Image (cartoon, rainbow, N blue to C red):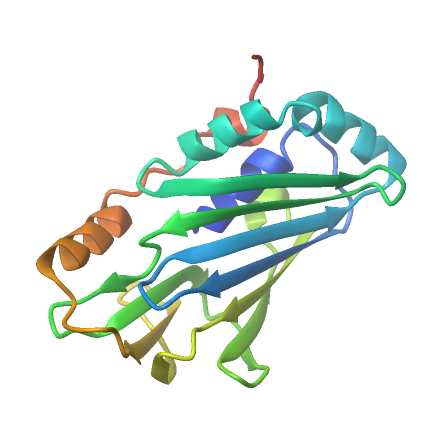
Length: 206
């Protein structure tokens, strides 16, 4: 299973011939399991021109295609910033219910990456690097995950498929209600990923 972030990368990086490019992805979690995703990247001139032609100059289409590539999540607070001088961009949005809660009340955050080499940066912040094979290993994605101060007992483990997961406790104001338990679970189980056509390059039009 691919991560929602890889689905996003498939969209943003589509149509360009990238050579050893680096993408920074910061995931900032709040106390109810929503995650602010901040993706940033700097490109060479040729890649920048192509990126602008496909999605950079059409933020409405970028938002629409991002939502289509992550249909199991409610996405909001989109913000795209470009720096033409530096040939860089920053895409920010919030994914509601990106964490899930199991029947025992344990909070779980799935990376979707097998045997991720996790580095603890301190203050409930972690980092890992991935080179997704969907791009031939030419894209280096540097992930940082920041847990809220309400999170405790954060542990790194693996799921039944060998993918790295974080399990933790969360101090919430009151008991987690049934709708949150069901909603988070359904978002994970019902996740549908971007198709090969999205990776190959969606044609975005207003």
